[in-house]
Amino acid sequence: MSVAAMNFTLPEDLNAKMPPERRGVRRDHVRMMVLNKQSGATVHSVFFQLDQYLKKGDLIILNGSRTVPAVLKGFWEQGNNSKEVEIRLAHRKSANIWEALVVEETLQIGATIRFTPSLTATITHAHPEAPFVTLDFNLCCSDLYNEIYQIGQPVRYEYIEQPWDLDYYQTVFATEPGSVEMPSAGRAFSWEMLFRLQKKGVNIAFIQLHTGLSYLLDDKWHLGPRENYEEYHVPEETVKAIDKAKQEGGRIIAVGTTVVRTLETVADEVGKLCSQTGWTNLYIHADTKLKVVDGLITGLHEPEASHLDLLTAFVDQKLLYNAYQEAINRKYLWHEFGDMNLIL
Image 1: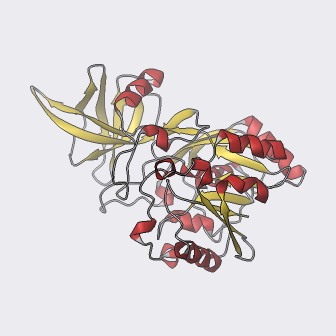
Image 2 (image 1 turned 180 degrees about the horizontal axis):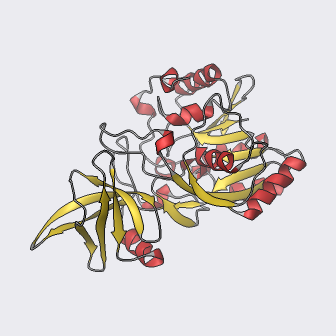
Image 3 (image 1 turned 120 degrees about the vertical axis):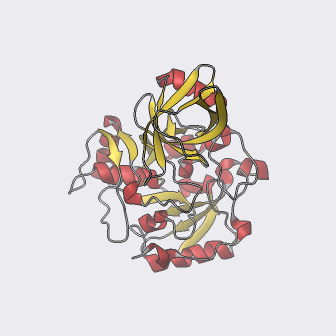
């Protein structure tokens, strides 16, 4: 199946241009379309009522990665001259090394960018046939993050008409910084919702996948799923929680495509998991046999997005297309500040 098979027309007014809180809607009260993956039947609800569609013993897996304000502005220093330059962090490679996109400038290996009096970065690799350079920062770990959080801005897409504070790009449960684009499927959760789910007997566990930069600003570059390597960590307690849920007949519900990619990467041929840290470029599509995940909580994805291919591993492409047309007709809102889709 080609990505083009899931092409559709998304009206401009269905792009969520502001956080729901700024529209007078609590983050956990966005709309939710519940899609039956066997029949394609839909139910229209509110995300706060998620517990009504889950049962005791089900296990929700959340991505605990915290969003980094990845848009940084600094000065490219050449002798006695300097020029303002914007860079966008793309992937963290180590404690002080990042891949990054340089916006509207061509910088050579050895070029130094000064962001603050105490923070600089040197370009150590540049590839004419790839969009990213490698930046070696003079700081690392918490010292580097402290600087980035002071000066950076979150990545903003073309349909977002004004900048929003970084807090709007965080999930309430995020811990470890590393994602440059928000793992947005978890955004609608509130602590109140999580407590309600636990009270019902729905269990919760975490993985981490640090999302990379997909919005490259220039049509010259396009990174497919197999070219997009992202760092993940699956802790031992999550492996044990998944094993226990499956043994007791519970369903594994991934919150976001990042969680699906992570768990299906870690699973062996029979679906057995072990605690791992690594990088994944797993491409999931209609012919992929899912070994771990039974259901998915996700947002609504734009036409031709590779995320739509991943959704067809859960539900037939024609049923998914019909559900998306229904969501359009019912004026659901798209993207990271939009409404939700539960596939079970």
